[in-house]
Amino acid sequence: MITVSGDGAAADGAPGADATPRARGEWARHWRYPGLPGLDLLRARYVRHAFPRHAHDGYVVCAVTSGIEEVGLQQGTVRAGHGGIIMINPEVAHTARAGAPEGWTYATLYPSSEIVAEIADETTALRGTAAFTETVAEDARLARMITDVHRAAEAGNALAADSLLRLTVARLLRRYGGPLPARTPRSAGARNAARARAVLEQRMADPPSLEQLAHDLGTSPFALLRAFKAAYGMPPHAWLTDARVRRARSLLEAGHPPADTAVAVGFTDQPHLNRHFTRIVGVPPGAYRKERAR
Image 1 (tube, rainbow, N blue to C red):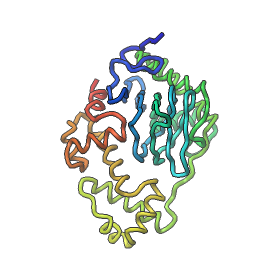
Image 2: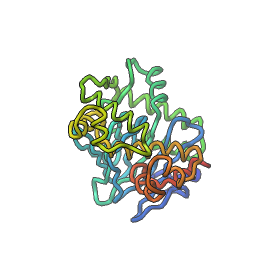
Image 3: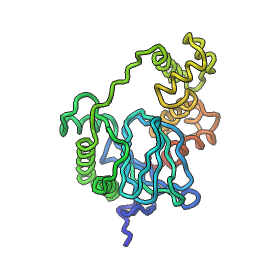
Image 4: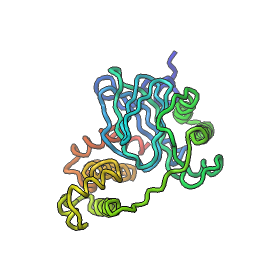
């Protein structure tokens, strides 16, 4: 029997009243529950939708409830089916797409670095920045705990949602956690990549060409391409698109209209923002803004 918790998605993964319909039987809800500050939630079903290479400021923890999700990382591709969980650390570039014709359904938690650090300090002996040492695991119990966080949030039960979130992250860290390796730019190429990233952040709406950027940094375009991809998992133009979408999210959360947001972050127009935002975030900017305005 399908039961719907609150006005969100059904407890078994079916779409609820607040899920944004998509083409070909896809649906998604990307939202934030006021009782869980510092956490974004996504419950969705995707079939043909594919996430391009991107990264997140915080952590990604998802439980696949049906179908198969395929995640592409620099070191290779991992797959997770029903009962599987996927864990991704901050700033790790990755793609995601269906690994089976029927697509995949999943419940995802996006806890901030601050939340994970707080839980790690209180419940583990990890030193430094906590990280996940595994990307994929078959762990049906933890997968259920992840979906239980969603269920409690959708029901408006702040006490249960907060408790379940902390228990889930603590257990994930104890089973699959370790210290995050330091990422210090030691080589000249890594230093140039970091400097290039800083320039792109400052000139997001009016970025230089690759040739000009390389010239200003005293290197060659191909050398900068190689160094940037090695440091951040994607070439500068892909990283810039991802960075624009991240900044667009902040502006939309602050209440800025999508059209104004598009111009502010450097997209040509609102349709340009819509296309890239939907590909990377999984929902259109209008639906994203609407959820934050509830």
